[in-house]
Amino acid sequence: MRTANRTPVPEPVAPRALLRDVGALAVAMTAIGASFGAVALAAGLPVPAIVAMSSLLYAGGAQFVAVGLVAAGSPVAAVFAGLLLNARHLPFGLALADVLGPRWRHRLLGSHLVTDEVTAFTLAQPDPDGRRRAFWLAGILLFLAWNLGTLLGVLLASRVGDPLRLGLDAAFPAGLLALLMPALREPETRRVALAGVAVALLVTPVLPAGLPVLLALTGLAVLLLPRRRDRPC
Image (cartoon, rainbow, N blue to C red; front, side, top):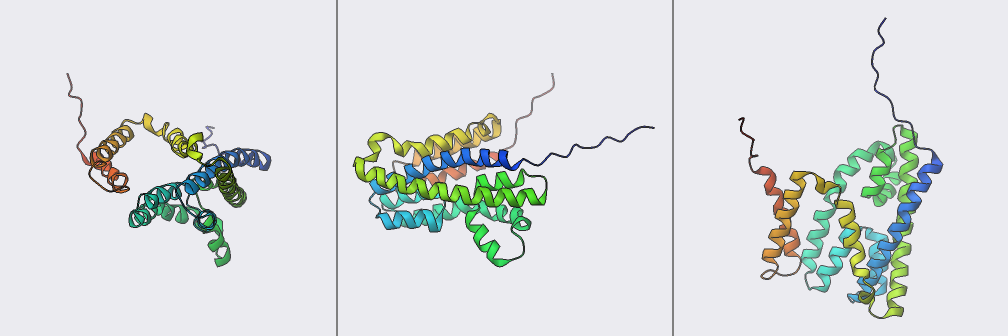
């Protein structure tokens, strides 16, 4: 009698291991939040606005972009860039709908905690209970870490004077580059990235701040080009 092949079911991550992994990410989130607080203060934003942006918007990378564009005098571009960058949360919300449950208070609170990292931790769990546990644990800890980091960055910047001397403005780009490096192994991803960089560099001298970053998205047009196929010998 032949036994049918079965696809192995992944085991749920133990709560202790999940807490360890989320805690490690929370440390990094605190550091990046500190860089945001320092950079935002150096850009001239008042402290209440900085704190409100991290607690009420909680938009991560979009906050860095918004601060840079507002400081450059392009508030409209800042709003558009924020909406564009956070559009990815729409499919995240659809994927996490079952995790949040049917109650509106849970959905309203949970929607504020949705980030890339929280979504990844949640969807990595194979069972519903594990997904709910991962979502709320990661969501709450990372939210607190980001806001704690923002406050630390503001305090540090107020004491240092010019936080840019410490290179805090490079923390977020460096972290983002580290996250992108594995994706750049794919040839198509590299072509899109190079095309976007080329477009941004070409239009930077002639366009207002913020628009070159948005126009870099035209690099996606590379995916529409026909692929070159190797001819048989």
